[in-house]
Length: 296
Image 1 (tube, one colour):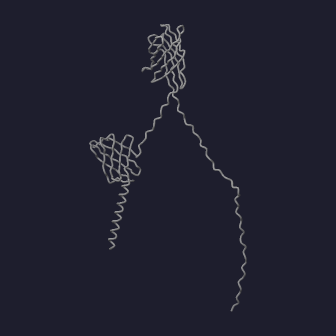
Image 2: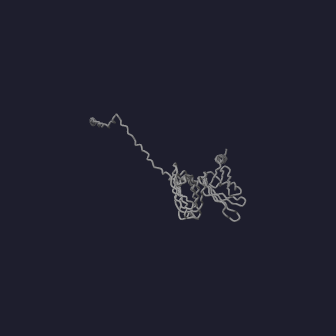
Image 3: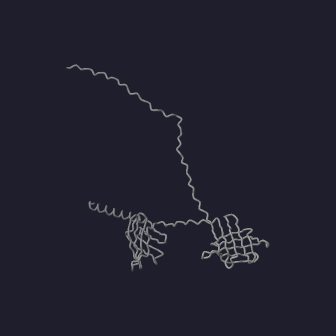
């Protein structure tokens, strides 16, 4: 076979082998999906060169095919679909894509994706607000439309403990003077404080009462009081102030714990290590003189 034919055959075989290896390498590559937190998804397939972008902001998917799509390479894609044009910069070696979509007629930005990766970004979990561990309602004042009706209250409750405190009320017009003999409950919900218990009135006896304080928009407080005997009053608080509070338990701070460091242990050797011995130098033996040959 002539030499030039052998060269041609070798070149053809090398080209075919390279193409086969390229096809095998691209066939082994799987489609790569890039995601962001808004639901935008960009997919690129190195085996076929196909790519597609889907987004909740777009009415349809923008898709196409390009020869520049390769594994481990950087490339730029431009694709138009319907009324939109996509510009994408893909870095396959670092698995990152940045793209933007413009409205074709006025070049207005419709969508932008910055440094999307193959992993969906996880939003940090908000730290839950600690629940209250103590409640209190305290104050005094008079009720509107009758400044002679006066009250004083200081009731509190700690988590896991019963409510305690004091409450007094007087209405001279009704010859009513009472005080709380026992506080049974205190709840604060949406800023409204509710107190329940048993009152005592000199000369009349005991009975149950319910008391409520509701903050108003102007900063004042509206008070409602109901007694077991049928007495009831609902009026804004004047000439005084009522404070409603719920204390939140502080979050425990972690205490750093020192980890003990294990020092290396040395095991003594029972047999002592012999010291190197000095080898005496060899003694030189004098060489006898050579015999003298008489001249011929």
